[in-house]
Image (tube, rainbow, N blue to C red):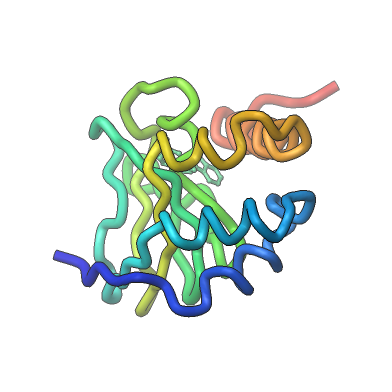
Length: 144
Ligand code: CMP
């Protein structure tokens, strides 16, 4: 089981994440106090394809590899997020996400996530844009 603790530097990290750049200090503070920091070891499976997933993950430190049926789709690093797809459509996880070396994430439950950004059109727009980009790259579809 991964460690679970309260993030010490979550506020400064959240402030530096482009996705959340439009949020106020108090919104960031609220998010930082509700989110949980989790640590993973090399090769830990952070989320598993096909599992019913809850939680939105923001990488604080380290790198994570996104894989589908053993094939690498992407590698994500500090300030990048994953887990947004199952959060958006409430369906099973679309891919495995594996720690590449030690990884620290900030994890928001769906209700924490929606309470924090549900009324923030810019955040939702950025999130959707990135989600669509990922879906296109996963399916190999071409954009016009
Ligand atoms: P979710 O389906 O909840 O869980 C697996 C996650 O992997 C998914 O959300 C995305 O965050 C991420 N993911 C899926 N496909 C890609 C991709 N092509 N590029 C980057 N990340 C991806």
